[in-house]
Image (cartoon, one colour):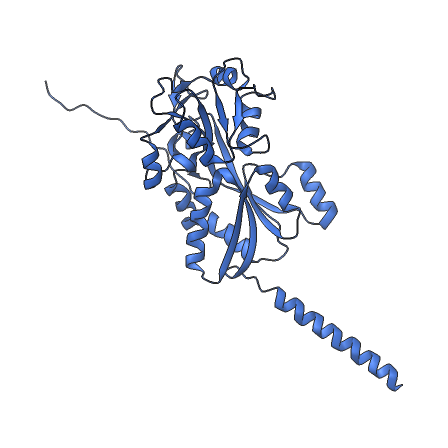
Length: 306
């Protein structure tokens, strides 16, 4: 009887210890704790700003971001150590089914902003206006213009261009990969013939001094507007041309969150979707997806008397 009592007491003690350990490790709240996230490298400048402002508002929050290719982000999501990824697409049906079967839970996802794949050329390059057919000819190698991408075929930029411009055709041998977006920019600065493709937040923020300096060495190319009523309309990537569908190479920015209970990942996605987070996207000259903008028609009258 005494031995049975001891065994029961030991079991109770073990359960209490386990519960205490679980409580200690589950310290995340909406505004505190530590999480690891993986971010598409083409969004790095704007997400760094999101994290900076969020952590300055909540000093007990620690978001450790790794910037890598889109494919690597999705691989990281399958690991226990990564709770959130920020990428240029949502989950595919088979990916959602995988999580449903493996962990009986489909990660939450939502659109928070619109970005653009930006074409950059050397400041001394004469040709900086492209139709979609010209881009297709260049990317497929039909026109032997040097092309610099932000990595190999695992990046969101590569996937987007292959899907939206090449429609599944392979890239030509003239398409080369830099190690990252900075590598693309450097390559274009050093070549008057090459064109590069990077995310808008790397080169589109005219309020960022380092990016303003780049305008002395590179320029943003214009792309044919396929949704415009008029023919022969070309647009540069900007907040307004993305919002009104004038810039053809626009793309979404998603978060995908794998979090059973509301913790720091939920707090950060709430922040990006809130007015403050949306204003950060806006200040980076991306198009916020959660703020309503009204398009107003105006008439400009010429009151100058001859």
